[in-house]
Image 1: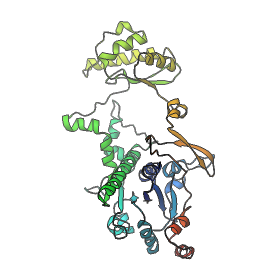
Image 2: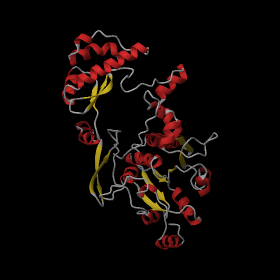
Image 3: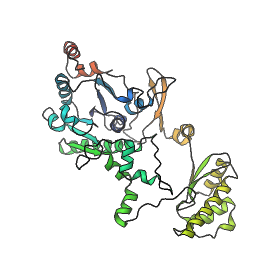
Image 4: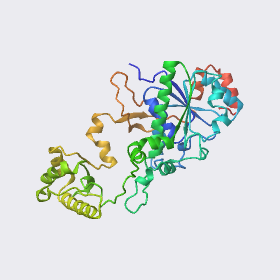
Length: 401
């Protein structure tokens, strides 16, 4: 069976993370993604300016992550000849995705209004930072500012109110990318059902608000902001992380204190504390919560992490190891569900990457190939679009490709 998006052709004008990861998700599900890059200024993640390059091997890990399965065409959209090539490619495309700042696609002549004469059913999808409307629509957004403006960064603060930004996984960028892929699929489905192309905008700000629906709606409906707590005084001492004797950490995830505390006390040998009431937000309750955190910390320090996990799981208490990446990569659950996949890289041989978490029983998707070299498929794509070798040579002489 074909993958669900097989036959859908996407022209990908995006760079860095927010857009490219969206098209990776779509390509894993079978979409043909042609990455359009400027001949002189390709995606910045091809270089080492922004990090992600392995010093020993030279592998561009960020670029590989954000561009697998794609073909690369070097095309200068700032030239008239380059734009004409783009218009030719649009005739046989389904979607054009970009993540430039507001106004750039219009200046390049590749916005929805300019593309529809060449393909009335084309879908254009834009990853914007703060949305197209409003006083700050022109401002650029990166992961840190996306987390900050959406309210998420404030949630990372502990008791002293200092936000803790963890940027290594680019949360706002990747959440925005997932919503971008979602919006693209919806537009493709709408075109299949109703026969219409359309213009789609997915903002990083809106994506981050949607990710926080649970807590943000609690504020919007009830006026209740999330309570900041310090590591030694969480709102629930049995929904917390603890260090074991072997310096490994475990996550204890008991949502209902009254229900789980007596059982937990029995498992941990703390029966004399089983009748304690749940800490409340009062000053005395917070103090009691700190005492319980310390009690549990001292207890878990008495044995290795895996010993505690075995005991807790035997009583069906929800818990998990706090795993570092070497453990994640060897996790039997990860292996059993094929959540990490292997690909053949033309330079580095067999390499591992995160696979797709969406498992379709009849039309499965999968990672298929590693990221392309810059402009690797230019001639191949143009030949398929009807250009002759003579015309391709002329385009190269003009600097369009």
